[in-house]
Image (cartoon, rainbow, N blue to C red; front, side):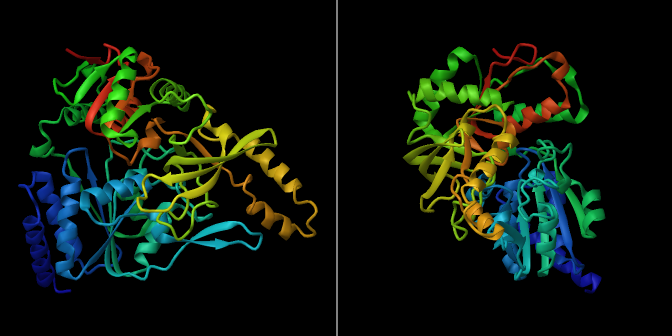
Length: 480
């Protein structure tokens, strides 16, 4: 493309983006609009734009302006996110469909032995910009379902195999990195250029928008983020904002506040975020007993969260495609209870919260996962179920027949869940709730470091309307 022509298109794109902005752009938004103009107008192959933006800096406003602008320049768009909840949030703020990355790029194949294998599909899109939100969550291993590669590699291969397709990765660099990683590879421009040989640029949103200046939640998150950037622990004890949307809370006051929030917003509208699975289990037990008066091990109406990917129960043609680690469900009906192999199982019907309009799914729950302190059932337990289930099919003549029977066995495929009233911060990532209770947890002076600040920033930014700072000591925060 002639450079003058390219500049002309870039200026027109930038002008259109401005026209689709509801507010006056901040200085860093102005730079992003300029970068987006060049990105759309570029005639280079494999174009990538990484957009790093902190809470309240206007990522959503910019995405909304972009999706209104692209059709005028003969570009379509596809909006993606790593999890169902993150896709639901994206869909809510754009009022357009958004999908999980898995649902978009993978399709299911069966192995000769009856197992399930996901492989990247062919990208049949042309002239399309793929916009991926919450990219900080995308690791080099976690969330991958393809068996060999990783989600980030599969995403790049899928997008750039399409004709004139481009990719925008959007994320918050101050949030927790993927589980097991000390950084977010999808936001690391040097890593992406080296690994995927793309034509790439980076734009950062750092200015808090004027519309968000009165938010106590955002004020607190911004101060913690600035302390994180400088690794400055001297800012503590920090004064909590004198704002109605941030409240300090003791454990004695928790039950009344939870009851109030659940009453006002429904069970889907509030969540407690804590630092460990053990502490989440303790809170879930107390919430079920004291707030919902539930004494049974599990009840109809309970909200649970999948703690491992499960490819057996959900219809592959459904909005979810499979039940992913982190998907939240409401138990709508409980069926037959089983004790087998030394473990407890129960049939249930569930409603996937983040996929509205989908029919209920029939599952078999592995009840032992509900209250163990590890993230999911230990390997010794899953190995035992594998071994004992396989023994059930010893009468079948061939190994292929035995393996196929195993892969279709409901107990081998039982869904592992935990209660979803209190969750770890990693499990909450990608979602937002109107009311969030953030629990300090066990914290010594030596543990107050950048890792804790990153955890705290991520937890606080899950709240959209009301933030409760639960059990925080005066060494960290001072309140009136």
